[in-house]
Length: 226
Length: 215
Figure 1 (cartoon, helix red, strand yellow):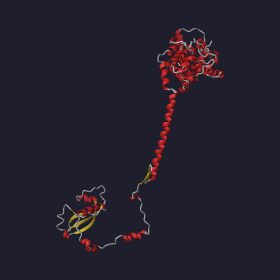
Figure 2 (tube, chains in turn green, purple; figure 1 turned 90 degrees about the vertical axis):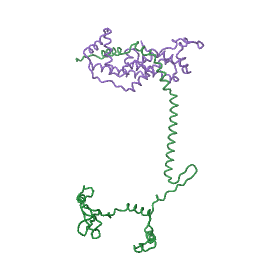
Figure 3 (cartoon, helix red, strand yellow; figure 1 turned 45 degrees about the horizontal axis):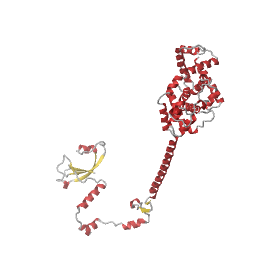
Figure 4 (cartoon, one colour; figure 1 turned 45 degrees about the vertical axis):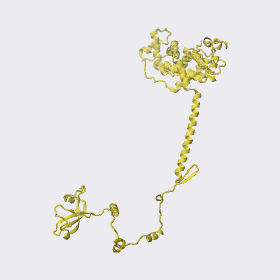
């Protein structure tokens, strides 16, 4: 587009005409000012933004915030006192003492107490003395006591299985048990699986200790796993 | 001649009524001061009369800054609502009549709205067509325009003056279109005469830059 050289006076003249043409006409302004809902809008704005109401609301809000903050501080202080006091809780003017359970108190022993503790413990008793004692002789079978023992037994470390499992290719293991021998052997897991034991064989080369019951004829009758 | 309608309007031009006169017809002839007193006494009708009397003046002020009808309506509502809440501060002394007081409130409301919107002038990134350039050059001549040309000029002015801030355009409109004096503008806006001159000079320079860009 060709550029035209125009002096500032002509530019002002063009500018003034542009502004004059962009100005709203009297009829347009009258149309806006004559809107029937204009005054209703003014009343609505007045009703929604009266400063006196705002001040009253502001005071109430400030009062509520201040009162709420005081309540929060007092509550936090009460909870802190409750937690810090431990067993001593003060409610109004009554003082209540809450005892602390003994199990929560740590028990400490010094080296000087070691002798007293050892002397207070019962000394070792031989098995023969125990069998000959009157308590052993007069002891009666108590089922509940036996049950508690069995329960305690499960808590103890795992003991080797006392029963021999009969091997599939052997006869009755009980008929020749008198003349047999027990051999302690180590078998691989895969071998045990081949013998019919249902055990996981992920690590088949791992050795497992076992007792093998061998009859007088040299044939294995049973096996017992450790 | 200044077309500024209410700045120096004399209260004596409004028919005064005696206090013992009653009836709606006579109440419409109350002076501004009497209406203000009645509003302060709690009369809604008096405030409605003030609104009816000066809404057009306020709309004129708003129309200098804004073009869209809804914007002008909003300025009118804001101005009268603010006037209602601040009516106790209206003193009504010397030449500052209720009309000029309302017009100043409206002008300040316009400037506040512009400040809140923070609308920056749009970029000069569009060129004019050959017809638009010809139309623009024809404006330099003093030929009369027909209706079609007036419409074309109006569309062109809307396109170009988007690049001019609203407050600059309002000052130029008061100076060029409404032929207001610097003193009148200073009274209306509450500025000093020097400030009005400086702002008018800046606005004129901005408009020249815009026009030079397209010509």
